[in-house]
Amino acid sequence: MIKELGSFYLCNDNDFILSRCKQVNALLSNAYWVKDRDDETMLRAMSNSINYAVLESETQRLVGYARVITDFATMYYLCDVFIDESFRGMGLGTALVEYIISDERLKALSGTLKTRDAQALYQKFGFMESDVSCMLRIGSDG
Figure 1: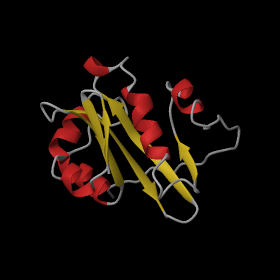
Figure 2: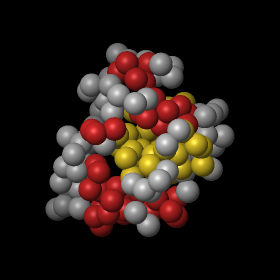
Figure 3: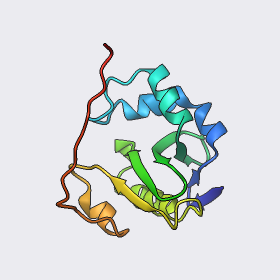
Figure 4: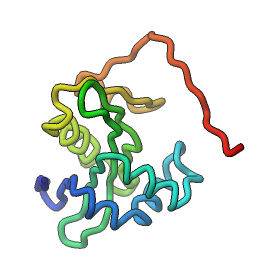
């Protein structure tokens, strides 16, 4: 599904976005939580997710990205939400999150995410800070 947004558009065509994996990874290399993710790992992550992109209409330049991991039954995890720094302040992050949570596949599901600096953005869409304990296991190579 494509949604026009002025001189940009939002897209959730997985095949199209997967074909731009290297561009996605280059965009995300500016995000503090992804800096060292290699293209192969990114492709595996994207292949097992619903992908969303923000593109400039005229140039097809990728300016934003997010992905969702879900069981399609009870919950989803929103992650890797990022807008190119030169395009921030234009409402693209807000439009991207709104586009994602209005996806028919996710509407009835509970969503979760982690953020250390964008609480105000997500609170607009009903996400709330939780005092529930969270446990984390970090994977290892060996």
